[in-house]
Length: 379
Length: 229
Image 1 (spheres, rainbow over the protein chains, first blue to last red):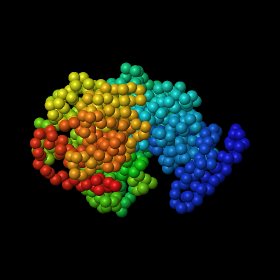
Image 2: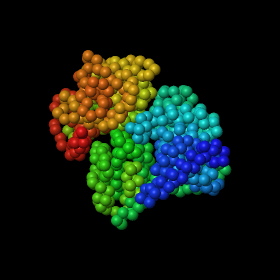
Image 3: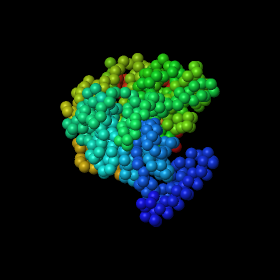
Image 4: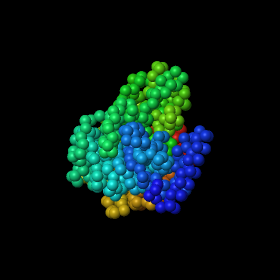
C-alpha cells in the first residue's frame, strides 16, 4: 500500500479493520462472514477493490458454468508461485472480490459474476481474465446472453494490460474478446452451442458444421492460437486453467475430471448421495450426459439465484432418465415432474429431500440439484 | 394427422416455448388424435399444410431474422386465412403485428394481428396471470420482455392482466384474431394451462374433443393458480 496517497491509505486501513472485525463477529454466529465484511469494506471505502488490487497480480474467472471449480483449479496452479487470495465460498459479486482482496497475498484469483465482470475488470486492471462460456442462465436477471456479451465486448477492448484466455468455441466468448489487445484464443475442436444460432457480432444466421461456426462477418472458431482435443467441460476448464498458469509462469497441474465438476458425495442416513450442481440448461445437459445411478433425485428450486422462471426445463430432453427410479423434490418439484411426464418419464413427488432419500432403493443415489439446494444440503 | 409446426426454434427458443408443441402433441395423444411435430428451421421453407403453427420468444437479432424468413411467400398469413391455428409468444407475438419499432428502426410485421409494439423503458419480468373470456379461470405464466404492445381496431385482447404487465398498456395481454393468438405468457403457457392447449386442439380439429384427466397436469395448473394474489 506504500504507493497510495495518505488519505486513501488511512481510510482503506480503517475500512479493512472494521470489515475484518465484523467478519469475525459474523462467523461467531455461524455465517461465513465473507459477504458481510466485503459489503462493509465497500461501504466505507468504495474504491477498495481498485486500491487493494494495485499491488497484486489479479486473475479473474467468469462464464456461465464452471466458474467456481475453475477458480479453484487456477488457485491451485498459481499457489505454486506464491500465496493466493481467493474467495472460497463462490461469492462472486463485488463484495466477494473486495473481501478476498483484503489478503496480503501477492496473487488474487477471483470468480466473478457475469454481470459484475466489466466493472471488476475496470477496477482491478487484471493480469489475466479467463472467459469460459456464455449460455442462458437466470434470464430474469441477465435478460439475454447477447446483452451480457455486449457488455463484455466493450470492456475487453478497454483492458489494455490484460491477457484474455478465451474459449472461442463459444461464439459469445469469441465476440466478447474480438477487439481485445491481448487474447489467447483457444479451441477444443468446436462444440454445439444451445443459444448460438445468431452471430453475436453482426446478427446474421451463423453457419454451423459439426460444432464449428463461421459467419460472413468473419467470426469463426476455426482460427485459434491454441487447439486441443474435444472433451468434457471439466477437461476443457482444466486445460484453460493451466493456460492461465502458463502465462504467469506456473508449471501445469494435472486434475482429475471430478476435481472440476460441481459434484459432492455426502452420506444421508446410510445412503451415498452423489450431488451434482445443475443450475441451467447447459449444466443439466452436461449432467444428463454423464453416468447416473438407478436412483435419481431431481431437486428444483426457483429462487433468485436459481432463476425464478422454470420455462427452460422444456429445452432439455430427460430421455436419459428412462429406466431410472426418478424422485422429484424441491419448491418447484411439480414443474419438473410435469415436464418429464410429458416426455414419458414418470416420477414420485416428495415433499422434502429427506422424504426423497427415503424413497430410494439402492445405496448410491444421483442427485441433480438446483443451486440453492446444493448450498443448503452440501456446503 | 395433425401437423404441429414449431417455427424457428433455434431463433425463437430463448424462453422454453418449444414445450408448447410437446404439450399439444401429448394432449392430442391422450385423445388418440394422431399428431406430429414438424421443426422448421430458419433455412427451411415453411409448410403451408400445418394445422397449428407455434412461435416463441427470442432475443432481438433472432426475432428480426425469423421475421425476415417468414415474410417469404406470406405462408403464415395464408394458413391463418384458411383457419389454421397460430399461437405466438412474446417476440413471436410482436412479429405477427402490423409493425414493431426498435430504438433504431421501424420494422414491418407479418400483419396477422392488428397490433404495434414499441420499445418500453423498463424490462417487465415476473409471474403473470391473465383473465381471458375464453376461460372461467385465470391463465398463469411468466413474462420477460420490454415491449409495449398497442391494439388496433381489428384486434381483440387475449385477456385482462390480473398480475404482472402483459402488453404493458391498458391492463391487457396479447391479442386474438379468429384462430390467431398472441400473448406474453411463457411457462410454457400450454404446460401451465392445459385447458388452453385443449382449446387450440379443438380449434385445429374443428370439433369438440373428449375431456381427459391427466392428474399431474391438472395438479400443476391448479397449484400455480392457487398462488395468485
